Image (cartoon, rainbow, N blue to C red; front, side, top):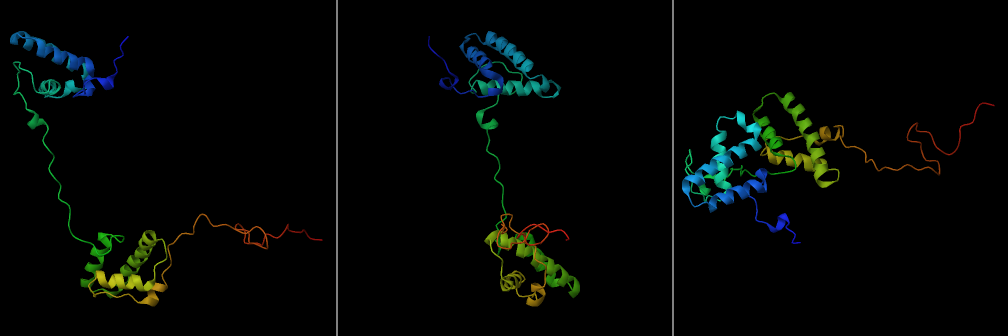
Length: 215
């Protein structure tokens, strides 16, 4: 018995209709009489509509079914269609290419928004507000720099990066930057000593032995 697997058959143009519908469409091509071929095409359209009951509520369902019929026929079917017969070029047009911003960022790991905020701060007359916003940005830059380089950034690097992104219009005091609270999280793989007087991570007591009760 000769086995017939799907991977040995021709590719289906619209797999959602199944191979039997494709075989019906192939049979339409073999009908020599054009009126009879058209009559049989309407029957195939009815069967295709029954396979997609959810599409019956759409206004242009009939038009879509006829387009699908010609797609499955590889646009090689001569019948009297109630709608304009589509071409392969009309239904397979290439999507329009999206234009992406070509503006280069100085530091990609900080992001574009950080650079935009820093540049906008140059025109802000409120020095107190600028200082507070700049401290928050510096804290954020520390976090992103650590994620990017996997090491704690030097304060001088943060200060120089702010100066470069602001075109020299903003400076941050190194003392103020050093006083900012670090947002780094401790590594979850930290191990504690269990011998030699190591501290218990739960209560901070040394774990050298059991507690003695009062005598």
